[in-house]
Length: 365
Image (cartoon, helix red, strand yellow):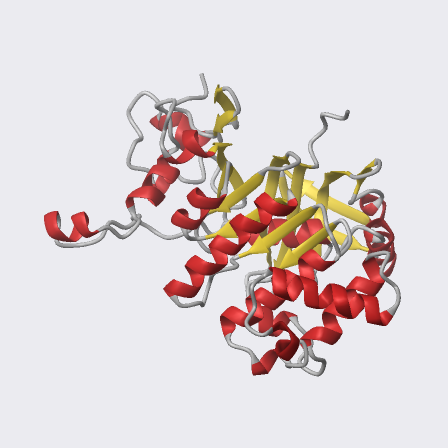
């Protein structure tokens, strides 16, 4: 039996060009991640940290140019394949002192190669739940029609009647109210929570091995958020699907994930088992992770401090990335022994305990 990760990301870089500033936005800048079969990996970080762009890069859904410029994404299905194989043959990247100065891209050839790589993978092996399901679904077709088409394309159920039965099965499985009625509804005829359930049903209907959920509870009422989280947890236990979940909500991440990756400025700053990252079970934590956890709204903060905690400073501008640690200007734990290194040299993502990695000079040695 193979022990290879179901998904392994190596040195992924996805850049965009800002015409206003005439420079490259380094949205994802050297990301390394692993997802093992049966895991639920939670990716957390502030807006602009690169979480969603990382997952969209994996799915081959980056529309803005230049897009993915380097890296490998290994998927272990029936055979191990690199989803980004051959893309670098259609790119010419000019760098100066480690900084990207120019990118020439053969767009048509690059896109054809990407689509060839994703054939039989996107939608079938890897499915995605998008942040706004109403904008992700076609408004001109009913929910049932869209799920049926997905089933016919990606599963052995090719006859329309049996595909319809499977669609109703999945709508019932995600506990949507009155599945037979909702089957004939258009996306705009559903509430936010119902539409999210329909999106989950569509993703699962292809019987994918890996499910990527991008902010699945954002924009929903607190009660509905809890129910969607319950649903994802239940479906994972029942189907054994491997999940990558992106969220700003540390509560959702801690509840659903057994592994966590914390991203900031296009980099992974900390990764490891949920207990190590959230509960600091090994006594070690990245200053950014610590700041995120302290910023969770708590009644005690209001009663004792009179205000909620926040992280000082602004999110990193990934056009002007500093030489040193990307979090240095906002960090509250820099001491004199590491201050110079923090400002001049970026720390490596170093092992601090079994399976637990932190990118910080406090732990690098």
